[in-house]
Length: 482
Image 1 (cartoon, rainbow, N blue to C red):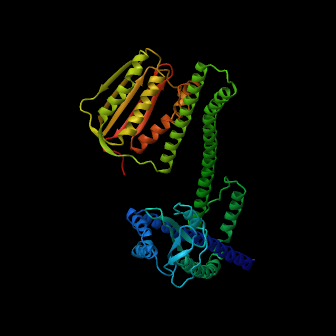
Image 2 (tube, rainbow, N blue to C red):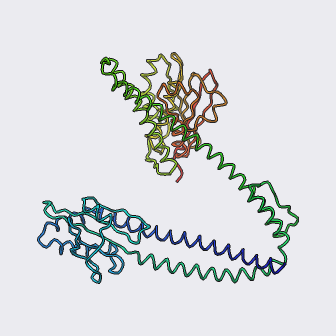
Image 3 (cartoon, one colour):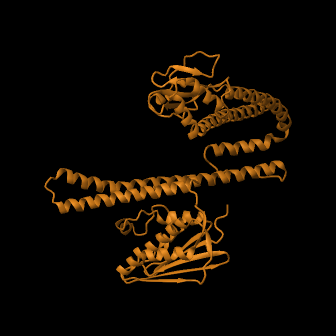
C-alpha cells in the first residue's frame, strides 16, 4: 500500500510539474511571439510614420535610377528598421505587378509570395498590421512619385528565425526543469509520504467535496504545526473561493442587467425612428406640418441614441483606464459661476428661485476643469429638472482641510430611501418615465461618480422624498494623487 501511495504521489507531483511547465511554456512562447510581433509592427509604424522617410522615398521614386536611390534610402534607415541581413529583409517591388526589383536578401531568390499586405499595398493602401500566428511578419507601404508616374511598394519581411530560436531555448530550459522536478518529486514523496498520508487523505476528501461544488466542507484542524496551518489555509482558501464564486454570480447578474438595459435604451428610440420614418415613407399624403413634427421626433430620438452611445463610450474609457484627465490649475469659483449662469435662464423660465452663495476667496484647484464643470452641470440640471416650477435651488461652495466642496440643494421631488444606494448605478432611474421624457440616459450620475473618483474626490447624495435633495461634491485642492 505504501509503495502504491508513493508511486501515486510521485505521479501526481510529476503531473503537476509537467502541467505547470507546459502552461508556463505555452505562455512564455505566446508571450515572446506576441512581444516580438508587437515590437516589430510598432517599430515599423514608428519608422514609416516619419514624414522625412516617406518624402525621400517619393522623391526617389520619380528619379531615373529610382530603385537604386530607394535602396540607398532604406539602407540608411536599416538600423531603425532592424534589417539584419539574416532574418529581416527589405524588398522594393513594382507597384503594379509586385515583381521584386531590389532586395537586401542577397543570398535569397528574387521570387516572393504575394501576401495580403503586399496585395493591399498594390491597391494603394499602407499595410502595417499582421497576424502573429503566421510564420512571418511583414509590412508593405506603397510609394508613388510626385508626378504619379512611378509606383513602387516597399516591403519589409521577417521570417521569425530569432523568435523561433528563442522559443527553442525556452523549450530546452523547461524540459530540464521538468527532469529536475521529477527527481525532486521522487525524493520529496518518499520523505513526506510517511508522515503526511493521513492528513492528506483528509484533505483529499475535502478536495473531492469541493470538486463537487461543496465549499462548505472543512478540514478539521487537530494541530498547530505546519499540517495544521496547511489545513487552516485550505479552509480559508475554500471560503475565499466560495466568496469569489458568489461575487462572480453577482457580476454575471449585473452584466446581464447592463446588457438588457443597453438593449432596451437603444431599442426604444430606434423603434420610434423606424415607426415615424416608415409612416412618412408609406404615406405620401402627409401634411407638411406633420412631416416636420415627425422629422423633429426622428432628430430628437437620434440625438438621444447618440447621447447614450457617447455616455457608454465615456464609461468604457473610465473602465479601461484610457480616460486621462487634463490636469490644470483653475478657479473653482469661476466654474461654479459659469454653470450657475448656464442654468439661470432656464430656472427663470420655470419661475424657480436660484441662489448662489460662495465662500470668500475660494482656492484654485488642480484638475480637469471641463470634466468638473460637466459634473456640476449634470447635478444642477438634475436639480432643475426634478424641482417643480416655483421651487428653490441653492448652490453653496467652500473649502476646508485642503479640499473644496460644492453643494447643490433643491426643493424637488426627492429620492426614495430605498433608491439612494443605487443612484450611481448605470441606467438606474428613480422615475424612469419622467427621465426618458426629459432625455435622460440614466448614465449621468455614473459618469459624474467616475470623474470625481478619478480626481480623488467624493460625491454624496442626501435626499428626502417630497422635500428635496442635497448633492455634495468634494475635491482635493492639489488634484488627484498619481
